[in-house]
Image (cartoon, rainbow over all chains, first blue to last red; front, side, top):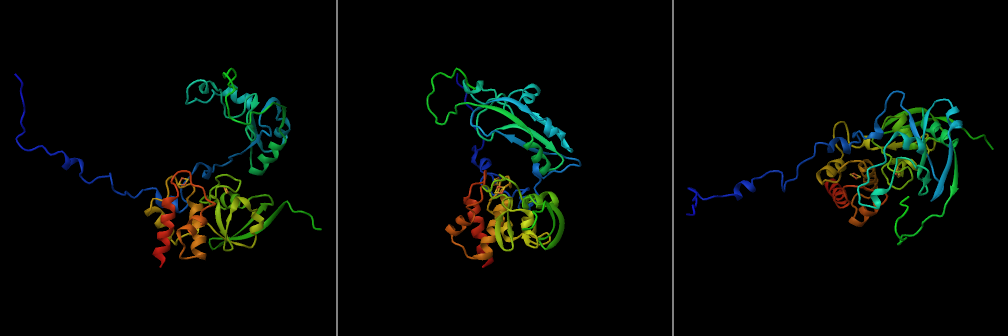
Length: 165
Length: 160
Ligand code: FES
Ligand code: FES
């Protein structure tokens, strides 16, 4: 036997579903006031006592092997807090997590170029100093020895991706 | 020929207050505002003159403050986002941006507001193409431009 259930009063679902709420209404945002007044505190707006400023040494080559990086002259300047190279990044950190499938996911990508640079302007070393200007001066003293390689300048099939680097 | 100077003491009026600071000759105006005067409402989005996040008004002219040296502003008068509106009151552009959802993260907003202010100072009744042209040097990565254009149009309308 099949049982059925009959409601005692008519079932109305729309009433609840369309009750005025957030959907379809303009809700004033809490954060707007400070943001339109320039009072939003973004990362770059934060200052700490004794804070350093970073300047990156960037690759002038689209594709090159990094043979060596010499930071010693930069470190000799007073008020230079420290330097960081791609090799140090590779030792101290894991590669970035790649949000894709192979072969893209096989790329080993770090915060600084490791072993090779793959575009003009890729950061290869970082210098931190007491002031913005000093960091820039010190970065100019970092010596990078490159071996230029043939750059890939157009997109197109290049055969099986044997060397994703 | 005079010797080039490495640093200089400059006096600059910002939003009605005159500040005197000793600055390196190579210091950019945007870093002078943000680091020396702590006016961090003016943002750096690119450092290369592309994004407009650093837009301020110098002696009545809209400028990207990453494209100018602080010492070039010596003796000048600057308006930044912090000077829009009065004590606790929002400028009509600030109100309109909020009302029309013309901002999301707010990073480009100070620059957008200053570009819009410079436009309305010069042309209180701009057409839509004029508004679009006025903000062509400002990049917004999240809101999209339609609401920004509407906000500026409505602020112009409100002033009539
Ligand atoms: S920071 Fe000046 S235009 Fe982008
Ligand atoms: S509101 Fe986020 S960049 Fe414009």
